Image 1 (cartoon, rainbow, N blue to C red):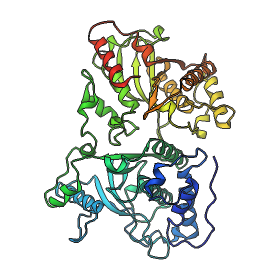
Image 2 (tube, rainbow, N blue to C red; image 1 turned 90 degrees about the vertical axis):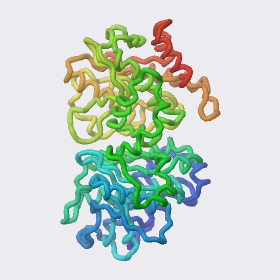
Image 3 (cartoon, rainbow, N blue to C red; image 1 turned 180 degrees about the horizontal axis):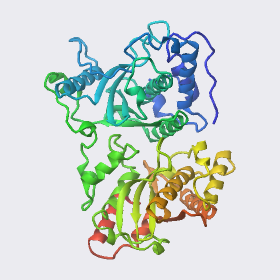
Image 4 (cartoon, helix red, strand yellow; image 1 turned 120 degrees about the horizontal axis):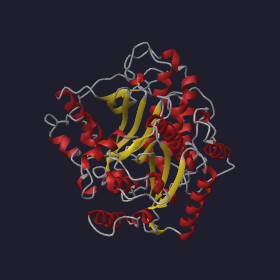
Length: 512
């Protein structure tokens, strides 16, 4: 991947010096704050924005001798609530942020913090004195969300780059922490989130940008021995700025943690017979941030199709139709959505499959695709960890594909082969634990249009050829690979009864 050159070296006055200009140069735009720049943005797969930001912040850290000043301020990465707000402060973001903090104080909540300094005193000058994270939420043991809150100012791209700069500062402080301890610097999993109302995002197609940044922070996290993710989260409509202004002293925060920001307006997303709360709980525990980000409600959501297709069988697994080409695996004994196939190590990220089917003999991991094959160029992110000789003696085909993807000898336009390799490695590990044979099933939709634009028939045909090429390359390996389209699978469903009604509902709503 092409690395953009760093700005000419000079003593930095801020840890974030040069980040915005370098990002603009790399993306070929004039200003991160310009809406038109984001609306016309075309991501170059050769530009790793996450790595660029991290290199600049790291250079500033070194050149500015930040490590020598790490104990100058005792406030960096503090965990505390700051509800105070000046009577004349009318900033929508500040009003909402302090309202949340005030509600948490009144409710005795200690899982939220706000106005967290990230670089105070590290570099000579006052530029970083007020640089702070808006919000942070402790979502589990050593797991946190770092949140950049936006209402109407700037753009999602500007907010994302700002958050990437803070994340780089966090990584550097974590590697060389101050004497004063901080729970944030002890985190092992951090979810970076831009949080804004739906109208803030509406003018932009953010899915390619979100996917690119998430891939970048995942790779950066792997190199730094920490799990990272990135997403654009949608602020629930009831948390309006006007509401916060009117009720500064009485605004309350739900006692079920972050769920107050994740489950609003979900009722219409599930077809009859799908256990709504169970599926929401599974999605909340998974790594894709589907609910809080608003992605589940997006008209192109792949997760919505998968959880509705397989969720219906959670409570009736024996009625799950056999998968095309996988009848030998036998009938389902259990069905679940959002399944984590863990690697044989504890740290870092582990692959999540859209669903899992257990039969008497097989562990079947389902990877569901809808618009993804026709959306953005597929990135290859396979760290050296996948080269470890721990996958068994019968995974040679997957290993060859892995190495060819890395070297560029093999590439796919539509198929995310790197993701499939990670899934296979997770499945072969988990199948050994449960004493079953692993099978990776690729279930795909074949949409004819996206956002009003036709998807060419040759693109759909090329996708099928890439699936066939991958299947041929891994044929005979321990993780069996099979595939089918959604329509091919749905054609196997009963011709009548409630299962047929569910199949028809899937076809009508998702048109796969």
